[in-house]
Amino acid sequence: MIIDLLAGAVPDDEAFALSEAVTLGRLRGYAEHFGGDLQPARTHDEVTARWADAKKAAVERAPSEAEFLTMLDDGGIDLAGVYTESFGSRLGVPTAGNGLVADFVARHPSRVVGFAGIDPWEADAARLVDEAVESGLSGVVLSPFKQQLLPEDPRMTRVYGRCEALGVPVLLHTGINWSLDAAYDVGHPRHVDAVARAFPDLKLVALHAGWPWVEDMLMVAWRHRHVYVDLSAHRPRTFTRPDSGWGPLLRLGNRQLADRVLFASTWTLLGVPPARLIEEVRALPLDDAVIDRWLGGNAARLLGRA
Image (cartoon, rainbow, N blue to C red):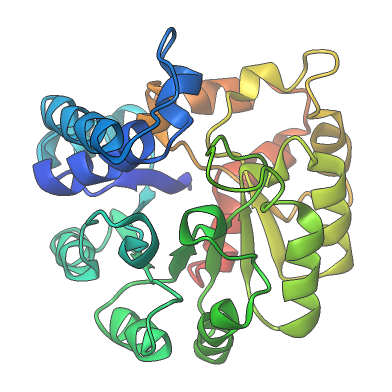
């Protein structure tokens, strides 16, 4: 079984466009970092204009449901994760609602799982977790740098506590961020360690494996049996390059932590079809049995589908 834990936004024009517009329009630093000659936006009007332009351009790239499912078929993917996020109280822009994700999952329950966006600044954040799970969603996505909180902030803890009680995972952004309005090390593994120590039974997925602090992130996973790392937002073909920072993943992920690594394509962010990313994982210098775990076995266990 191949599971793409975090494929991307729901294949809906509005949901897809809102997701893309946050990264390439609202977050100062991202468009500039990935967009060539752009200079950092300085004013509210500049940020607003970039967000509107990014949203309009993204609509044209949004796949249909049929195209999304065909993409999964092309990669031999049995199950894929779709998600939304929620940070309107901080960034002031809308995101797709959890109901839209739940509706998509309900239409394709054998092909997709959904993850809810929860804004920890909302007073009823814990109740929103309950509602998301009751609607058929399988966990929660949190992005501390977008929500302008450290991962161990008390506002976050009410979300963690509810997810721990319900037995659903939290997918937590870790590693570097390119936002000019957030500290670069909000996603450092030491913060994940603090959360795991406070919530020992919480299933935590460290998105992006904490790069460039991969070895630290793996030490945290080694310390805490419910901490996983995923491969999202990075090309597996780069993992073998000298000084890429991924050496510890290939070493520990092939042995002690072979059961804690998860494949996730975030194909929209990379602009690469999941099928190609799966081929890159299969080309890594790993035991065959370990590759099978990375590509699906570990995620199946995490999601209770093993």
